[in-house]
Amino acid sequence: MNRVRDYEQTFARWMGASHGFAFWKGRVALYAILRGLGVGPGDEVILPGYTCVMDVNPIKYVGADPVYVDIEPATFNMNVSLLAEKITPRTKIIIAQHTYGYPCEMDAILKVAADHGVTVIEDCCLALGSKYKGRMVGTFGKAAYFSSQWNKPYTTGLGGMVTTDNPNLAERIEDLRRRHMCRPRAKEVFMLRAQLMVYRSLIYPRTTALAQQFFRYLTRKGLVVGSSSTCEFQPHIPDDFFKAASGVQARSGLRQLSRIEGNLAHRRRMAALYDRLLTERGWPTRGHDPQVADPVMVRYPVRITEKDRALSEAAQAGVELGSWFECPLHPIETPLAPYGYQQGICPEAEKASREVVNLPLHPRAGEKTVRRTVDFITKFTVAR
Ligand SMILES: Cc1ncc(COP(=O)(O)O)c(C=O)c1O
Image (cartoon, rainbow, N blue to C red; front, side, top):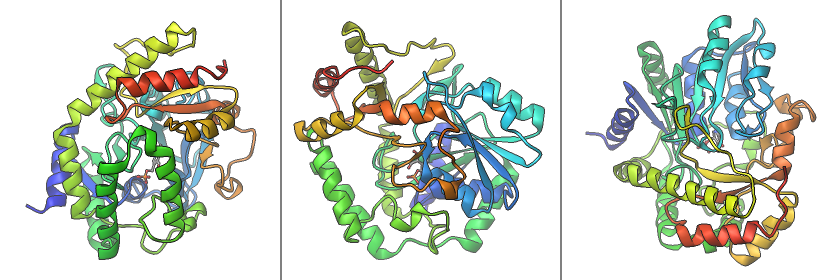
């Protein structure tokens, strides 16, 4: 069987979904869903104002308008009490983004959506394996999309996936792929394969900051396949955006899926260790009722008062500290006006952007790394 097909079916089976569609990136997966659902000019798509701009681009690419809802400070997810007031006759879609892995309040979101006849889709790019009321996220909405970019729950370098149980949507996505999708160029696939090999052998928590700087430099020089090109910081669709997944990504994805339970169990264990170590030092942690929210976190967020200083000292000390999201539509360079975001409309998201750094949970970050990271971060002042 075609390797990409095999990957799609294996992923869909693992998610308990009837259909899976792999793409070059997660943002392409969202674009396919929006096109498949017929979202277009004049429509509005609601999402949290605490996201990556690459998640907003597909909304603009189909000609729709993003509408931002502020977040709930404890979970970084959409504040559902603010959702109904954002709905207008133009609202077509609500994106439930499970930020960092915390599951959204799906019952409340689905209720508001049903009351107004709006479709819900789920952004699971940061939340593979998380459960809400015992059920896997990605199984609540009409469709879900996933990312396997470098920083995501598992990595195929770049990569995206759609899952859905809806046969009409699946047929429309299949049709779009047949008629409009382009193939990645041989050079891109070759470079991605080389990057994956380097990643597997050289990138560890102590080397991450240095490697990221070097990687950004190489991306600017066009010497590696970057996650985002400069033209993706404006809301205009690049020519070769709607791109298929390659065999290299599919092979890597199949390998990752074969060990996914170990990956998820590791993330749960390390998150519990952060909880315990931070609590011992008097830092607040977010308890959750596992009957309601059972997160598998992609990174462990903490709030501090001096984010910039912590990031620069971490890079010097070889401590892996993440800084997303740096602004409501990450990253900080994003010009917000073309995306319809005005400063002040999501105050909690803006505050979180100033305060949150995130700590590693991936399979290469073991107990020693977690302890070292906690020792480092607790030298700073927690923001409450
Ligand atoms: C919440 C969220 N959704 C979607 C995406 C897009 O994923 P990709 O980079 O695979 O296109 C990202 C980040 O890049 C993200 O952080």
